[in-house]
Image 1 (tube, rainbow, N blue to C red):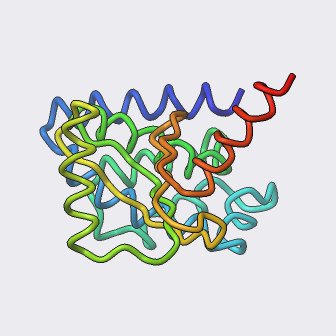
Image 2: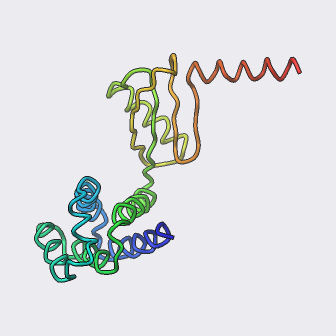
Length: 180
């Protein structure tokens, strides 16, 4: 249920950002907001406490995020007022997905035996972006010592496994099915 609500708010923010030509600015500012909400248990408790008035909650948000755009601050206030504080990170994540999709940017988790160099990341970004027909690729490099060598790439729900351990598993499956 909460993901549906998060998508509705994210969609409204996306449309507002398009109308006002502020999608990039919204992305920057909401990244800050997400960090604040994701790592601050006391803030979440305060904003969800039934004994604290809505006016005090709104004032705290106004003071804490006073340097941000009015639309960003008002969105946070609205979510808190409607008791949707818990989904603020989800709203921001959905909004971020929409903006990235609009710009042709895709996130990719790249699993490798060791951290990739900047040059390797650039080459991988270029080749994968072309292959996936995207403008850009945002690579998140994760070290996985079980790979033996090569890389495994996850884009959305699709996994491209070019690792040695993945190739060995495929060979093993082929041998097992051939012996049946």
